[in-house]
Length: 190
Image (cartoon, rainbow, N blue to C red):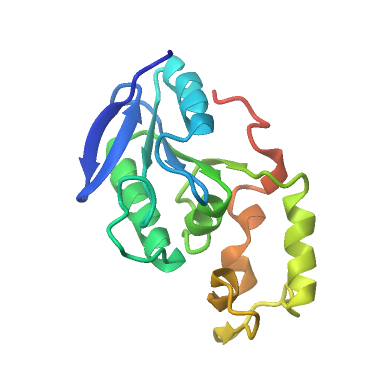
């Protein structure tokens, strides 16, 4: 049961808002195979709305109601999250992020510092930070900033086709005041 979301359109993209306008905004970004009605997102939205704030969730390209034949692109999804954050900043006192799986990656990869004041990153992995480090070792990616983008040569999976940009710009821990991805919902929304 719970709070029913309100349908709205932001920059031509269908979205849902739990809670009324005003107060703080949390942008909800679902994971792979998910959509804006993700059950984890809905439950968190009820908590957020109960504090007088609101959560806005939308379908990433090629997900949910946006299955128009366009392929998913992390770069395009990242641009959409940044644009939604820009809109939210113009209408809210504070903007946070609730992101699940690949939604966390696309939300934080190119996000300028200060985009989100709080972030809760949800992963089905028990230790996402260790997993990221293992993948970095596997593909010889270091913590050192890169002076130019480089391409990974791999099995051709979508994640491996992405350009490797300076690690700092794709490090979720560096973006959210030291919170690690495995410590989602650690701090209460207050």
